[in-house]
Length: 273
Image 1 (tube, one colour):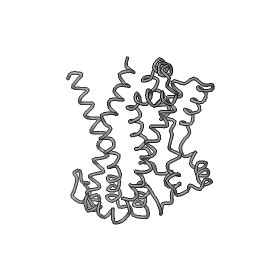
Image 2 (tube, helix red, strand yellow):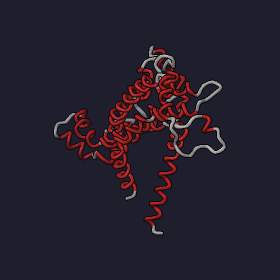
Image 3 (cartoon, one colour):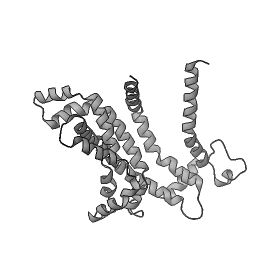
Image 4 (cartoon, helix red, strand yellow):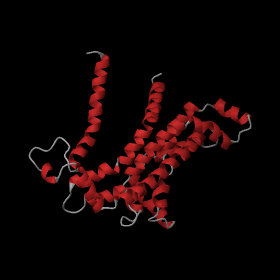
């Protein structure tokens, strides 16, 4: 067996292993509980998926919840792509006192577990009168430490000091240097960051549960948690909700797949030099 065949076999095994959770979700969602309780559980998809989708839409207002999630996750994704690019450009190409110390603080904030920040952030949000508003769910996620680090590294590779100095010599202000020089060169990494931010915000459960009234304006993840409450869990119905809720994330990945692969491949090539 040649090296190329071994690599293809390993890649195929990795793809199968990665897709297995999604396939098993489809199998469970397309059967009823009686099928799942048999001694030999089903291995192939059944024919109850559309029935479960209809029952799901009757049980919970998943459509409005997905609209809420789309508004929150979309705003967070655009804000992260924009603000993290500004911060990354500043840390990479601007000279100011305390730059390294401030960047160390940003990186250090990424080490703090998210759960430790829920109480103080909620106190701030409540003091501002934002409880049960989209602002409460959106503002804490506008900028992430990972996003700032990601865009700083991208700016170091894509925007040179000479390019910035040349723009300044031509009369560009700092804002125009960012908008006309740095931002076009960072569109690929910014798109990847936006996609990752959207997926993270879409799948967020704990903070929307705290910041929003679950009976008023919940997100998709909060609504799906109601299906698993009580003494009995209807697993086919719950996993049907999971399938429906991940459709926007899958569509986003399909739209940005080529961009993500290109950015990651370029990073891997530069790392291997």
